Image (tube, rainbow, N blue to C red; front, side, top):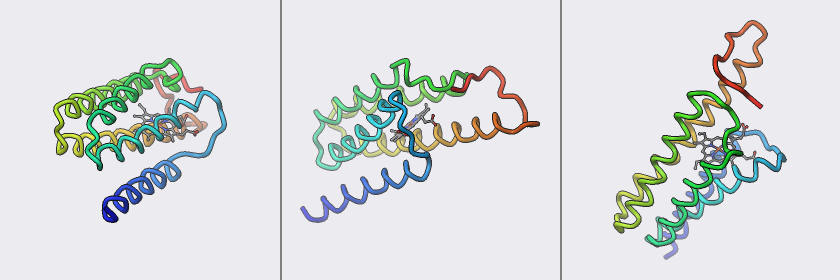
Length: 145
Ligand code: HEC
């Protein structure tokens, strides 16, 4: 039991460190949805660790729904759209394996989901950096808020 709690705690810490490292703090109300995303992914980790398949399936669905909200679309670019669709695919897959009560599938799916968080945030940073460069290449087809 102690081991399990430790695992959850270290997972939560990892998720926290992950986001605090990758993103500046912002207070834009539109970003509430982004904070929800973090909360859901932490809850998802807990559900997976305790093999609570029903909760895992529900949260995976919520994550998919979040990514369909218009406020999710902070950047309009083909790359951002592609990454969002990929995120939805992983969330769908997570919901499926949760319904099949497949704990290995869930664990792998969670790792895949986390990689999606990393990849999209890295893309965002790069897109902003390029946009700020006076002589830098123009980010074709992108609109950044
Ligand atoms: C398809 C792109 C994409 C994916 C995938 C993605 N994010 Fe984000 N995330 C964003 C964008 C865009 C922002 C807004 C910040 C910005 O404009 O740089 C953001 C912001 C955040 C924030 C900061 C909110 C704030 O108040 O500043 C958190 C926390 C966050 N994401 C967590 C996550 C987690 C956890 C995952 C994976 C489960 C994830 N994100 C996956 C695009 C993405």
